[in-house]
Length: 319
Ligand code: NAP
Image 1: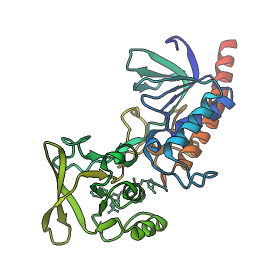
Image 2: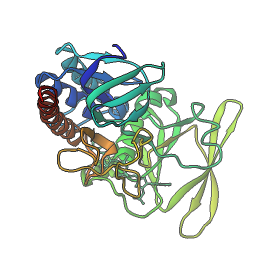
Image 3: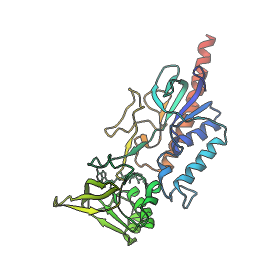
Image 4: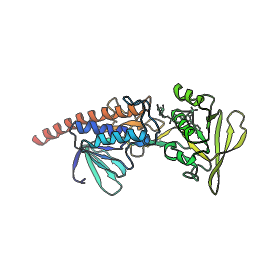
């Protein structure tokens, strides 16, 4: 990796979107570098079981990440585990600044930074994170063998993670702020059939409490009557959605009110040669297969963009 080199493409983010973009970019013979600050796989690395990625009836998130990552590596791509601190668009090329002081340049950039789990924002949540508060059942469920936990949320993630925790723990309270789940019907049916899960409808967690051993209770509030009560539990698992990680999105790129980036059908932003894919992009549904689809689209579009750019640069030089 060198500051003076001009790459064809820099991919920022190594989740399913970024990794798929890398596969297509390498196959299109783009001189590509992939930058990821953590482990490959993004959010799915924390998903217990994936049952809707075509070709796999069931696969763990970790295994799927591993397969995607191995597939990318088979093309001999340049990869770096570094943090990107800024993307600076330009006319001739775009610059990507890294936390170690280096700046990389490329004719095109694909941003696939995804997002992070939404927080409850109640007292005790930050303080007891890692001491009884978790956003990942696959990572932390093991610590609650034979214990009692509360899961917060009514979407697909909450259902899947509650089902996973029911296999390990003694009891799962599933709290949801309304009287109907948002999750897909098949997951709702499985939750209802699982005797270890007790659903607490119209209920929110307003405080997380702990003693010197860690979390030991939550305060629950009924959203209809406002009545409060305390529930003794050993852990709190929060699955209430997603916040897009848009801090690297440069000014001049359109975003919607929720902070998702608006692109055209090629996943290209208003800045030519800057593409945004995966969970950070505004779209109808957020699924692994769609993130992968975005990666394919953007890499093919980037390949076309780079080819045109090189041709026009060659014309300018020969004039
Ligand atoms: P989601 O679908 O946005 O659901 C978030 C849930 O949390 C909703 O039930 C919401 O309640 C609740 N919620 C939001 N803010 C809250 C707050 N402050 N306090 C209490 N509850 C709150 O998020 P997700 O479940 O993480 O799923 C995200 C996307 O990934 C979805 O498109 C989902 O289909 C997809 N996904 C798919 C799979 C799969 O197919 N295998 C697995 C996981 C996720 P309301 O319903 O009242 O708004």
